[in-house]
Amino acid sequence: MIGTIHGATVTGRAWKRTQCTHCCTPYVYLNEQTGYGEGGSIAFVNAAQGDATAVSGAERALANNLETKDALARCPNCNLYQPSMILHGRRERSSRAVRRGLKLTLIPVFACGIAAALFTKHTDWFLVGMFGSGLLGLIVTICWALVLRLRFDPNTGRNYLMPPNEDIASSGLTVSDFEQLTSEQT
Ligand SMILES: [Zn+2]
Image (cartoon, rainbow, N blue to C red; front, side, top):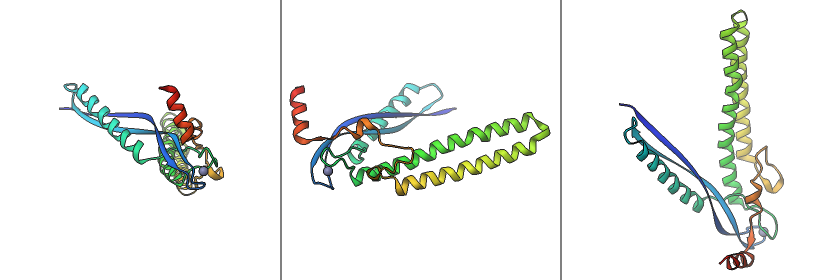
């Protein structure tokens, strides 16, 4: 019996209302979040059901994230991001940095490993390269993730290669502008 775990990720956007902690202006912005869900199936028997469970789980996680997490969107009055947005941005970016850093580290590690197997005259050097690049990649990844976690702050321009999504960042509207926009659309 072979079991398979089906994973699904969904991304969604919804308008969210907040109040600026810097200048007290209430504003509405486009929040964007992702949700992840999993479903299990046995061999190929109920694969479709496993997929459906994963998707509905991802949609539930998305709805929850849209409610509890805040994307980075500037206040339309003072152009600053809110502390809760920066906090979520720090968490999300540090885990993204870990995933990205580990993926990038695997490239030289695998390349040196393959070279060590192919060029047997210089195996030792390629093994040194394999462990050296692995260690270096690990150290750089941990430092990058820590810096993002502790110091990321787009209000002062400290983005560390992970700036806010400009679409979302500039989506903030004053409540009266937002109400005008929605009344024009209906
Ligand atoms: Zn403001």
